[in-house]
Length: 593
Image (cartoon, rainbow, N blue to C red; front, side, top):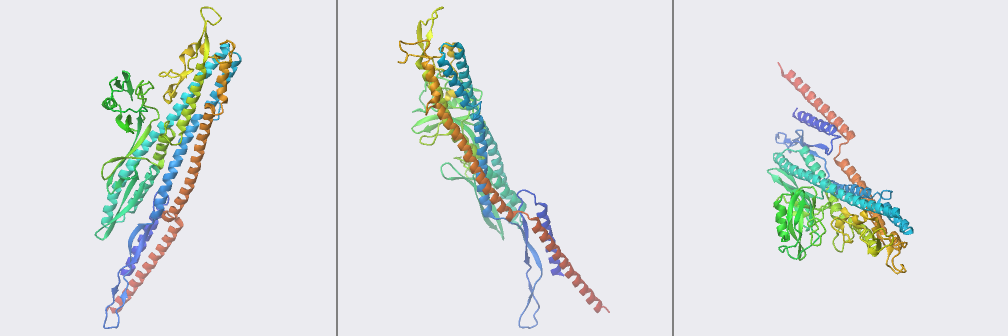
């Protein structure tokens, strides 16, 4: 009867486990569970002096209910998922950059350049035509507006990537906290002999979630409490220096911070020497900063920090010199204006804004120290790569050109080449109602920015480039005439040589138009490469997911077989109990008087 009773109990557990598996067939992250049966300890039959003492079985029991899990597949899955998340996110970002260019198309910069130079070709054939000059001016304004639109569009993608990385960092921090809490709960349950399968699934699901955001390393540590084994996971992440930071250890957890940062392009030999800046008021995130000629890098940092502008200003070494760095206290980019901190004046710091780089720091769960990290996987890694590499207009010396540096190089080459030709020409100056020039004046730059009218533009000028107001007010300052040797006898109103030179910029073999075409081609190649890597990583992830599902997933057919087997076991055990009961009834009937 006892043997039959244990069999009935075990069969009931087997049916319960099969039912649990069937119920969670569609539950994401659920691991198939299995009841592990063992024979109960036997006992020796009483010996009346025989040669041996036989041992009789006492039945069966469910020793444990465990998950079916292949840990090595978990590691492969998370690494593969981190790569797939990186390339799929990167592809989306690069496609967004590509859509900003709108190439090839009638609304792209290539079309604007062709229209602009075509207008100059027309002007060269009729240099005295006011209508042709007006068209050149209008096409120049359209070209400047197109440059601004593309540059701001590229920056906007970077800002969106930074914002999303900030949200992803918040999700990662939530996952880290939950992992640490589960470590504690699971180990406490295991220490009293429980098998918290559902909690173990939750912990694995959090590790899966975390691997989509950042590149992590994880390991499982076990310890013995009495006669029971407990387990906890440790999560680490590589730092920029090549070491590692512990994000989760036992019940302790660290955090990840993702923050935009901007660093001044100008470096100074001293951080405590007056910079000689123009006395004025600059703005950072809407907060005003009073700049004076006696300000040093350190004093500016102090002023910015005291303004509570949502940024932290620090002075950082750059080789043997120093720079001013602004780091956002949130995931939002830093905005600002002014001729020194955010301008291009001769003595200005020229801190770039719009699409600043961002820094990623991780706080160690055990030591509390914060270290810089360079995410190389997951969605945060994709944003980090896009902003700090692809959209970095100033790649480190010796490294390959970035997409943004190629764009700025091509655009600045275009604008400055146009300015050079425009300034080497001359335009007529009339006196009174005379139709004959009384003198000739050197050409002014065609394109300028509000803070730079020198004719040599820099990357800081691109967001606000415009046609020179002098030309907007007087289209006669568009030079078609030249003082070159081709102008026999000096400047001539009918001479369109300078306008022809301007139109010829479009045909230069290695000129700015060709450089821009190369940039567009490189952008397309970057998108294609990312798409190919995404496709490869998706295929690998599908394979690993299938392998993991075959091991840990629920098979309805298998569970139905288990259920029928458990049901048959239960029926047979009940039959044993019935037979024993019938035998006992016969025995009792036989011995009754």
